[in-house]
Image (cartoon, rainbow, N blue to C red; front, side):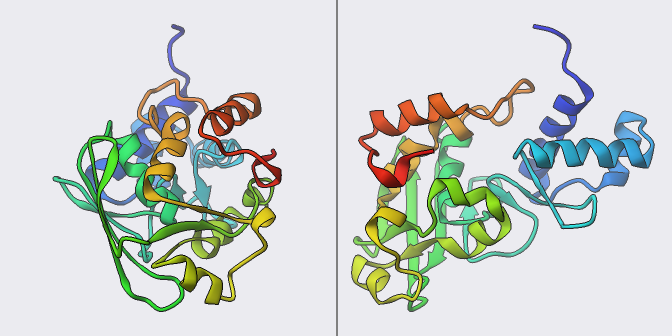
Length: 227
C-alpha cells in the first residue's frame, strides 16, 4: 500500500479524536499536528466534507459531523464501555455497533412523535434489547435526497418512532415509496460496508454499485432504494 496522504491521515485522526474524547479536533490542532498553514488545513477539511466523510459548520472550518459522530448534543445518545457519544441520527446511533467491531453499544433516544424513551442494546451483531419492542428507525427522505442538505437530513428525517402507529401519526410520515421503516437489526446490517472500516487510514466510502448490491442482498429493493 502506498504511504497515506495527509488528507487520509487527517480523516483518520478526526475519527480517532472523536473516539477518544467525544468531540472533534479543531483546525488549530490539525495545523500543529501536520505542520500546515491554516488555509491548507481548512482546504483539506473542505475536501473531506465534499467527499462525505465529515460535515463542517457552514462557512467555517469547524467540524460538525464525522459520521456517525456529532459534535453537538442530539436526541441520539450512544454509550460504550469507555464513554458516551452523540450520534447525528437514529441510523448513525445504531451504526456505532458496526463501526466498533460489534462491541457492546447502548442507544438511548426518544420517539420523534411523542418523546417516549427508546432504549436499544446492541450485542454481538444484533439488538438484544429494544424498548419499546415495536420501535423503528424511520428514514423520511429517499437516499437520492440525503446529501442535498445532510445536516437537515440527519437532524430531522432519520429518527426513531416507538411504533408504526406513532410514525403514521407524525407530520414526518411520507408515502411508502418515499420513506423506509427499519428495525434496529436491519439498520445494523445496512451499516456494514459504510461504517465497518471507518478507522482504516485508507477507508473509502462504498460506490453506487456496491451499495445497490448491498441493498439487494438485504432485500431492500424497490423505488425507495434506487440511487
